[in-house]
Image 1 (tube, rainbow, N blue to C red):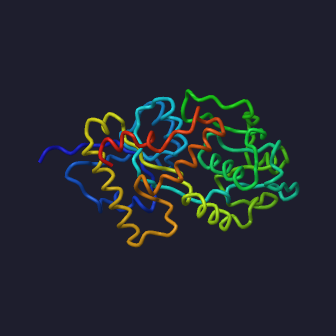
Image 2: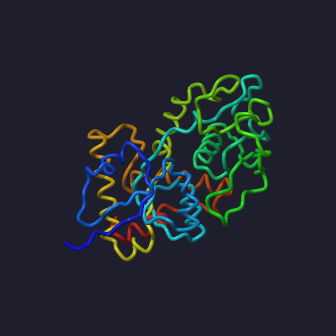
Image 3: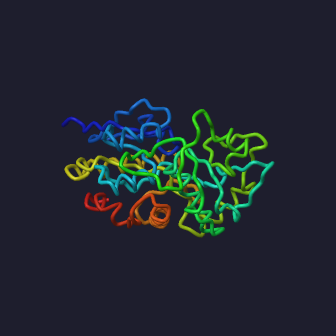
Amino acid sequence: MPDKVKLFTLLGDHPGVMPLKRGEVTSNLVEFVYDDVKVPNTAFKALVRDGKYDCAELAIVTFLQAKAFGKPYALLPATVMGRGQMHTLFVNAQKPVKPQDLNGKRIGARSYTVTTGVWVRGILADLYGVDSNSITWVTFEDPHVAEYRDPPNVVRAPAGATLESMLAAGDIDAAVLGNVDQKPPLVPMFPDAKSVDRDWAAANGGIPINHMMVLRSQIMAERPDVAREVYRMLAESKAKAFPQAPSPDPIRFGIAANRASLDKVARFCAAQKLTPRALTVEEMFAEASAAGL
């Protein structure tokens, strides 16, 4: 047998990929060599700036920006992380603000380009007419894609501050938090976030996508058989993890199943000045389609 194609891979311990990572899905063609990274998003900069990985999960907004700047990675129609988003938006109970009153306010987020923040801003615009460009976004980190520059309404938080401390002190009016296990005065803006997320997803193509899989473009072009095998293994892993697919499904596979959600997030990216224009789904999957996916 010929040697397997070894792929240096960034992939977190998501439920749908655990059968793959445990070795329950095998291949005569592909071998994944996993980097020991506990929190995958901490390695996204190394992926898009340095080309560190052959195969990786990647936040969908980071991919769209990477695509806009010509980074050499191709999208696979395989979602490994998706979720409702609105439970991440917090306010100060002592200085409450309603979603329809957010225009002109100050909102904190880890980074302006973080995928959760893009979904939150877009959903607020859809449901409440919130104009993201009227808001001052207070951030802490640079974008993953080095060439991107934040728009003028994005500012850096003071040194030593945290999202939680700024919200508690009233220095910002709301915050998109990664850690949603908070205590008063920090409270969710949407106490019924699950129902808000459910209704929005039902009307807009499914649960929002956070992370999808990418493959180095050179591999996709020169070894389409490897691309198809990677996709097969991921799909088989999901099937083993979930013999009955959840409904609604947060980790959808296939271009058709992801089309509406991807079209939505691409439009959000353009409206929020994250990409020069909204990429089409056909553009996102041009390389995958050429590889027979």
